[in-house]
Length: 218
Ligand code: E4P
Image 1 (cartoon, helix red, strand yellow):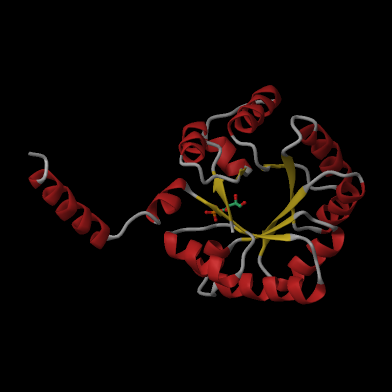
Image 2 (cartoon, helix red, strand yellow):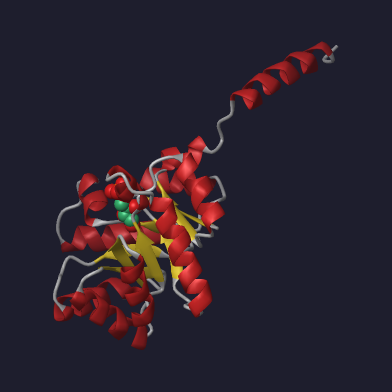
C-alpha cells in the first residue's frame, strides 16, 4: 500500500518525505486555505513547491463545477508539473471531465466518493484514483473501511485499473484496516502516520536495552 500525506503544509510534507515512506500528496481547497494561500499565482507556486519535495503524485483540486470549468482549470493544473493529478469532485460534469482527462493523458483523482456506485462510475470514466472518504462515513455511523473493501472487490473482479485511495483517515487504526482491506493508497495526516510508530512495549523494551547497554560501556 502506498502512503500519501493529506496536507498542503510544506513542513509536514517534508517531514514525511524525510522519513523515507512518502509516495505522494493529496490536497483539497480546505487544506490549501488553511495554509493561508491566496490568489492564482500563490496557488500555482504552492503546488510547484510541493512537487519539488516529493517525487510522487500530487493531487490538486479544481474549484469549478461545470465540464468546461473543470477541463480548463485541470489543464492549467496539469501543466504545473508531470506529477500533478487533477482532483475532480464526484458530480455529473466531473465524470464527463474525468473521461476527457483520461482520453487526453491527464491523471485524475475522483474525490468526495461515498458509495460503491460512485466508485464504479469514476472507474468507468477512467479515473486514475478514486477517493472514498472513510472518516466522514464513520462520522455518520457507517463503516468507512467496509466501503473500501467493497470497492476493492468490485475493481478486482471487474478488472478496473483505477487505484483505490482511502481518504479522510482519522487515526493509525484506519491505516491498518485499509491495508487489510486491500486499498492501493492511504492518504493520511502526519499524526496518523506517526501514530503507527507507537507501542508502549517498544518504549519499555528500549528503556531496558539502553540501561543494559550502559552496564557494558566499561
Ligand atoms: C482527500 O483527498 C481529502 O483531502 C481528505 O482526506 C478529507 O479528509 P477530512 O474528512 O479529514 O477532511
